Amino acid sequence: MYKVVIVEDDYMISMLNRSFTERDKRFQVLGEFSSAKKALPYVLSNAVDLIILDVYMPLMNGAEFLRELRMLGSKVDVIVVTAAHEIDMLNELLKMGITDYVIKPFTAQRFQQALDGFCQQRATLEGKDRICQSDVDKLLYTSPVRPVVPKGLQEKTLEKIRRELSQEEQTCELIAGKTGLSVVTARRYLNFLLEEACDVKSRIKYDTGGRPSVVYWLVEDVESRQAPAKE
Image (cartoon, rainbow, N blue to C red; front, side, top):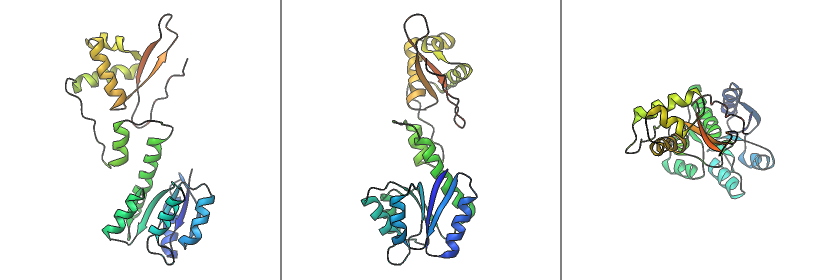
């Protein structure tokens, strides 16, 4: 469950932010602060995943608050919910790594979209030490971006390989035999699916009775199939 702090000086908006956030069972609101100055030490000393942040507040505005957090090394994610329409303010906050920018008055649907975007970002990056192009596209684009198929590869052949891999894990040699491709060409297709499209995962299999072999299997986009246990 993601831990959330709300920083908003308007009591009614703060209550609305809490209500919309807690409708989503993936989130828990730890606290609400009407002052950015009061929120700062709390955020720095507690495990917080996400801040719902207003911009226009007395003593310390949202941009000043976020700048201070970043200077002190905090990488906490931030969704800005504000009446600020200025381009300069938006640019400044984007450069400090905000996850989304929601302009008041807002709908429950738009607020939920911001929460979903945060969750997608976390899910895309969680547990990874390297990313591929489709991961980047998920983070940067609201609409899915289909990876460009390199020259020499055919979309129909890619789909055929996907279908084969959806049945069971297979080696490059098996895929070559089933598709009529050479082993070298089959490996090009598999490398594309592995590195660019992120449709496929691979592992080294040692229980072959001879040399270890690399096996591949298809990963579902929404609910990823668990990888076979390593030998």
